[in-house]
Every structure is written in structure tokens, then in C-alpha cells.
Amino acid sequence: MSPSGRPRPLSLMFLLGMGMASERINCPSRCSCQYLEVNCTGQQLQEFPAAIPLDTRQLILVANNILYLPAMELSFLADLVYLDCRKNLLGDDLDFTFIGVAKLVYLDLSFNNLTHVTFSTFSHLLSLVVLKISDNPNLVAIEKDAFANNTWLRHLDVSRTGLMFLDTSTVQDLPNLRFLGLGGNLWHCNCSFLDFITWMTESNVHFPDADNVTCYTPEGLRALKMPAAEAQLRSACLTQLYKRDYIFLCLVGVCIFFAGTMAAWLAGVCAVIYKVHASKGEEEEEEEEEDTVA
Image 1 (cartoon, one colour):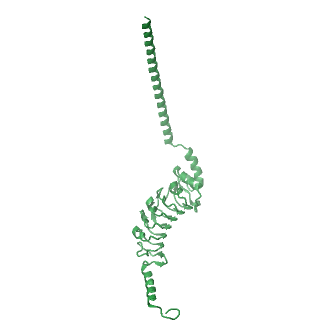
Image 2 (cartoon, rainbow, N blue to C red):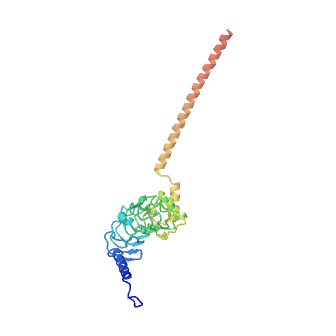
């Protein structure tokens, strides 16, 4: 019956019923669905859920036991813009995983088991604005060109990972970067890391956990914040000569000495030869003059 008391047309009731049934059928098991969103939080899923509606824009897979994100299934979600995979068991190789979700704007992979990030990990996410890969304790390496294609990236969080070093060009060449989380990492503050520390102090990027961005090694700089570490490293790295440097300078000096000695010896030999030839020429001229007079 309609609100006016009149019977609903059979065709309209059929279409409404089919629409509701279709919505129920398209929602993955143990997940909740609403308009363009699929939420599977805390369902102890072991695998990526099946039968996700193809028009899904937001997919939430928080707090499950998912080990692997299948690139093929993800590629069917071409309109996906928001993917939250926090607190899963994702690890090892994610290269080319996101090749089919180029519209993705928000990606959260924190609290997983990532070990490294290469150029191929996120290179297809040309629209990515927010990337969170914090709290991955086994993440020990990020290639310096890992984010080369993510030029729209504004928010990057690599806090509380296993990182000890980050190349300056990895983040320096991101024109829209405004937020960078670095705290809780075991930074190795040596001369190679000085350029990155200098970039931190001079850039306009916001570091929300700046008080927790400290050196872990070497022992003499442990717990120092980056500005203090920069001052010590600058004086040490730009003025200190190591044993190998002295050896190199000695070798250069020896080479210069021998090169100079050889050059002087050759010059002396050439001068002697020239003088001998010159004296012989003079003697021959004198003999010719005597013959002419005679």
C-alpha cells in the first residue's frame, strides 16, 4: 500500500525489491555497505573480501589478518579513492599491487609488516595525496625515487618504522608535501645524513612529531634532536679528516713530488741535449768559415 492508501503498482514494488536484493547480494560477507562504501573493520578476514561492488569509492579493511592485496581484484575497483588497510599482516612485496587503482587519493598501510618501498610500489598512484606507512617495524628501506610519480602527495607518514636513513631527494622533490611524520625511528646521524637534517631545518614542511625525531646512533649523538645534531655534524663532517683522508693526501703529495722530480729531470735532459746540439752547430759553422777563408 502507498502512503495515500492506494495499492502500489506491482512493477514498482518489484523494482524496489530487486534493488534492495541487489544491494544485499553485492555487499561482501561479514562487511557492511552503504552508498559507495564498504566497511569490513575487525572481521578477522584472512583474505581480501570477494564480491565488492565495482562502483565502491571507499574501502575499509582495518584490523583484519589479510596477508596479501590481489592486484587483479583491486583493478576491478577503478573508481576507488580511499583505501584503509591499517592493522593487517601485509608485508614483503607490494610492487605493482596498486596498478589498477590510479584514482586513489588516500592510502593507509600503517601497522603492517612492510619491509621496503620501491619505485614500483606506488608509482601508478598519480593522484595520491595522503600516504601512511607508519608503525611498520620491519620497514628498513625506501628507495630514493620511491615517490617520484606521487607529485600530489601532501601528507606522508613514516613514523615508528625500522628506517635508519632516508635520502634527501626522496622527499625534497615532492612539490606539494606539507606534512611529514618521522618520529620514533632509529636514525643514524652520520655525515651522509647531514643533508637530510639540513633540509629538515630549512624546509617549509610541518613535522608534527619533531620532538621525537632524534638520533639513535652514533652513541655520542643519541637522543639529540635534529637541530642540535646538525650543529655537531656540520663541525665534525666539514672539518674532520679521517685516517684514510690523511693517507690519500700523503699519496697525492708523493705523486706530486715524483711528478715534479721527473718533470725537472726531463727538462734538464732536454736542456743538455739542446746545448750539445747548439755547440755542435757552432763548431760546424766555424769549420765552414775556415774552409772558405782558406
